[in-house]
Image (tube, rainbow over all chains, first blue to last red; front, side, top):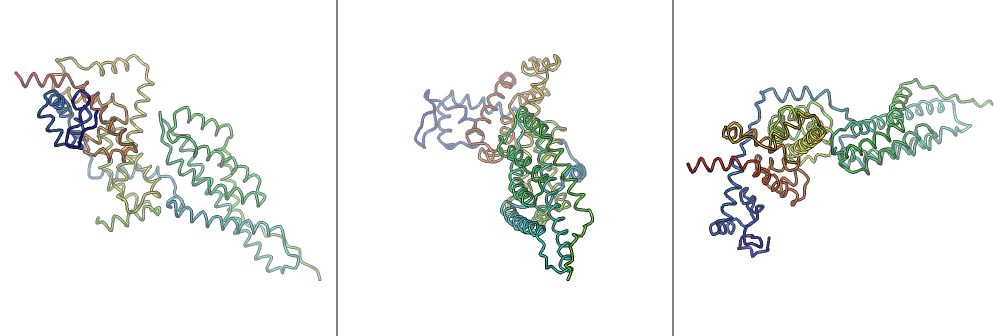
Length: 269
Length: 194
């Protein structure tokens, strides 16, 4: 198509309009409708072409969708509700609030790390009452840490399952990638805290999880069946889903286990 | 439900209130089904897309901007779910190798005989077969343009396409339909002249 002054119809080298411009005219999206109509009035070939396009498109009947009853919305909701994934509070947050929550999580992790460091250094002059309170606080904070990691593992498991259960020639995983990216940030904090607290088994699973979440984040947003097979193979080889599930269950058990007071030796006078 | 009620329901749904999300589902189900059916032309596939669209919306609700229009946002999710469904169907069709299916596919591409074409009821079938021959993006763009009256710009935003890609998807769809429907057009010309 040649460039023409705005007052003239867009014509190609042969002096005729392209099918594309005629289709746009049919749908009311021509940039120069007046000049296009003027051209059609003076060009029999283009007018015939336009008539053919209009006639074809007029043959495409309007689609009448089957009727759905007044209670259709309720029926959809009843089918849908059992399928809804569990949603933690963090899941509903916007990216800005996610960052804020991650900041808070980081602060909490630092506090827990500080606690973990203090746990192995008990001042010899500590009074027995302080020691009992400290043990109770320690139990509460430990439970909070385990619960947070267990929640994180469950969210991560859902992302991994969504990706591995995907099916189709080109599966769009962009929403799972965004979700995985958010989980990577949280994972890093939990992993570092676990390392500092000396929880090597937790740190190892989180390390493996982080690498697999990053693989998902950096994969193409539309996965082919081969890509999906590769993801599944990697996860299967590492038995990652199994490890994540076992660790999550283990943490839940530890979270509900009774707190055993830390024995504190009483200084004899 | 007035605008302030709708906003309140949306806020509650974003905070994780399942009942509020249920209210949104009930409010939008009909429109979601109609769009899915227009795009897919198949009742069962449309129902599957309805389910999948609401599931995706639920998962992505945290990223929904409260000042945006929920219906428009859901429309985009549904259109993209329908495209995914079409791609899955294309994939299944390509994977089929049994002779019965090949024969039926050949019958679709060869088109009906002139006698059968003369039957008005065949037009819908031929159009539907022709639409099935389009790629997922061509069919989606054509449906949004032709049946839903969406502009090219709106199609770009809905399907996450560039302007040129959206235009050419519509153009290719029209070109393929012209080929498939040419016998009908000639027939209607003959009838008009006689």
